[in-house]
Length: 289
Length: 85
Image (cartoon, each protein chain N blue to C red):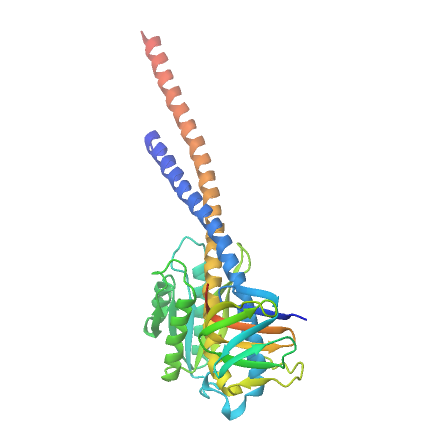
């Protein structure tokens, strides 16, 4: 049985926890708005690039296609690029991502393929290491900058394309959260390298002139496309993290409130009982005289 | 008829407006785009995009780095990696 003083301390501790979760919730709500705006502002570029890619990829095919589009001709060695957050306090977001990554990894392993991980963000490292310790290849630390932007995407893309050029993997998959709302962030698995050939859209039929040639443009476009994919993933991660954090902290604040209420009732009841006992003792003592 | 001009970077849409002419630093030389230009696509080198709001007006200069330009039915789109404000 906890003493009165212990109960009182417990209430105090839950109250200060509640203050922290409430503050974190408000910070996340403010940041979410900014992250969401950033994610939306990045969309026109990605859409345009996708459209141009589709138009070009339809024209350049066969043997002349660059390696980034055509692939190495094998799909044995797989690289899973997992985008996790750097900070916790965001509910099940990271564990959902890790779950999706592990699912994909076991799927590939079951097909007799090799799997390697490339981890972006701190929070995925420990849980993936527990199960696939020998398969963790490289990684990229985004925790040193406040808001990862295009430079980080640039650096990651350069490293991945370099690894691809050095022939260390055949296929790369990108696993990242897609922000749908503050309540829902679904892990998404996309093929990153080789760039999946988009649906060729032979639209207007107008003769387009290319300068320099089509292949040269495509060659320049593909790394850019990979970069944009990674940048999009980073933006989505940012929005997802804040959204998930807001929801999780809202729940935590509410739970703390409930707990405080219960503890207060318990505390008052116990105090009343102590007073009653004391009174009975005094009365009994007086009667005995 | 004005030319519809869009300048987009990964971070945001910098410009979307109707202008008279735009001069783009293509990788094989600068080219000017007016309304009704034939469909055209080119990579661009680092340099200045000159935007002429009206005929004969002084151009507005925007420094861009890395990207490409596309001329289609609905005007000119420049996709640049960086834009110096």
